[in-house]
Length: 227
Image (cartoon, rainbow, N blue to C red; front, side, top):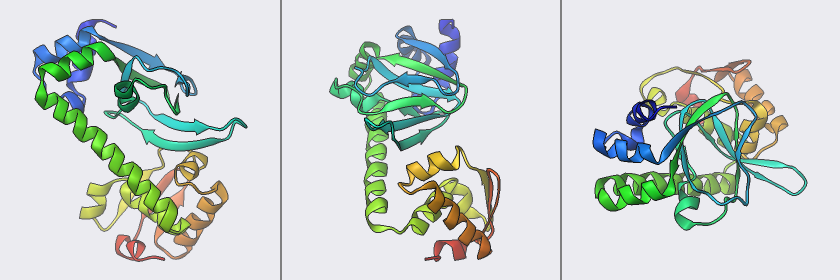
């Protein structure tokens, strides 16, 4: 893909929104676009990172894979989101594997060009730190949820976080599950059977309606107080 196209892709990513065209042009020189078919791996646990990724379109999951082949989904990522920065900065092998859940287009940004830009642009460095801090906050929140919250509370939290702005300003919330229920259950650290049971109970209580991947939250106020 030509540099001009990569430049345009990066210019529309939130992480780079505050950069000048000349800044993005420098980063573009060390970047490359990568199309990944659904099901393909981007990297394996144990590999050394040479940069980080930004998703233009599609969906990616980060997973731990046990020696027995069992998966634990750590994060589901979509357009505009980035991943791999922490491992790159630490210069340590990936602890997780990354797999495309849909046909995806990503931009891989090389480590050297990124470090050069961080030294050149303190504002960009602050944006990177803010992104990494938010990710750490999410991980801490996950640990709290897995340790202290019931299965129903985890599912409700996931439903309400699927579109926070809409949930805060509307009596109804409608969205599509971004992945299979098996993957979502792994992300919430529960079994697929438990996820199905909780969704059935919430539906029977008139709080949500589930049709395949389509979910409608019918009563946000009651859902928030459900236990």
